[in-house]
Image (cartoon, rainbow, N blue to C red; front, side, top):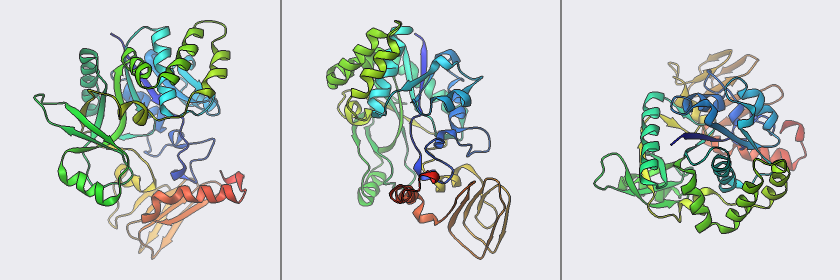
Length: 355
């Protein structure tokens, strides 16, 4: 059975303002110094999936930029363009229908476009195991990350040990908890972070759509019937915007039976906000993470990202400093998750040129 990669790349990434914008979300940024995050994801997938079987799902506004970004890596026909943002159930179902109608059944690896993996060889080994497990068992498989601290920014997966050594039965999927609950989860040792990585047969997930989300499945079938016909794009544009908005976690994963989880130990980071650069770069002797041309005197534990201009800092601690073409961000590291509030304020003030 063939293996397919499906990269979800429709998000906005407002926590990386001022570098990320509406027309340049996080997946198009080079935060590691190596390549765009979406291209790093394509390259990791290509270690165990044929490039002709790698798809990127993005929205119609971002499609031209995605075609440009991934040119030379994957064919333009493998960029699946959503006419409207309808959350992850819709885009995953669309990709599953695309695979079934045009390639036949296969194992799908669903991956976010903007994560960082420190140990790609360990990642490839685990994903190959997940593919084999999904194909043999016919079950939904997910990848959990052993928590290193009590995070309120991630969903959690509760699991239980069984007779198998390298995978476990999922007991429950839990939404983002408060800090007290998160601490209890970490202390228990029976919870993992939900990485948003899923592996299953296309036929399996479509069966779950039919069972648990029949209203969405009906829309997907209508789109599927038009595939490989001259009306494919017309029907997609008409039907897709009418699909109910619901996440795959809430719509299927939290309600499905017999879900399996593998524990990913490969240096995972979801690169969710500016403080995540602490996982991507080694700090200097004063604890600073520095990218670009910088001068720092008596500066400690700062994250400083310069795109094209010199950043000079003197006598400051625990700050995030980001220089973009037309805007500068300065905030305390404790406020990294709240940068999106600046974007909301700019919207409220009508300053669209900065969005």
